[in-house]
Image (tube, rainbow, N blue to C red; front, side, top):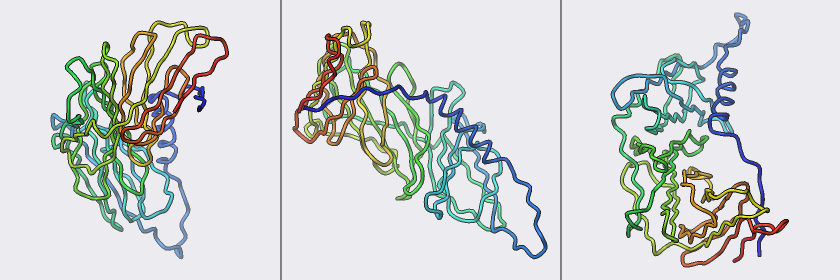
Length: 312
């Protein structure tokens, strides 16, 4: 028997972005340094990334820039459309292009070389993006609601900003294909029905081809998840139960937007192999899944002081 743990809720994405913006502004502020005639000039160049949305209009978008030739380099969160002076070398550039309606996103990543005493210009065109498609080889049913979370990464650099599709009426995520083997796509997908007991979740990391991703239902394991009502949980009639992969790399921690469902809640999650973290309110528990395995997880027992448990 394994005890599930109760954790504090994390900051919202908006709060994290505000903090990142503050840090980015601090990093971007130029320093005034006196240089003597005997000092060597810095080896640096300029990088300008232009982002076009799906209508072909240029707009300032968020991007991450990380040095690939410097081990442990700190990523910088900047905006497109402005020149940035950087030391010469290779950089991972990841861009999230948001449409004016702020619900549709296009993700792109590439490796860029900044040359000494030169201006490097890169254009990211969201019109080249393909809609991300993650499906099962046997569709679960017409009343299932799919949600997909995606992230693009460059191997050896920090992960990119993420876009979310599906869930409560949000638009698809688009990805710009890139054949560079360093560029990767991480994804998590869930399928939940308001009436069916079976639910599905899948995660993985793959090349950024833009091609449809199809997964075999026969290769999943099952985790039975139950959420109760009572004094040891919230006094509420609905809840969201999340399925979050404990993967490493580009898919690490990707979480979908799942719908609120009535309590008591019971679902058999059929998930791809690996470690998964299931959460309800502030409770969460981990299940290690392999093809054909079976496990169970209970949340919010209706007894004071009784913790949620995970049984395998």
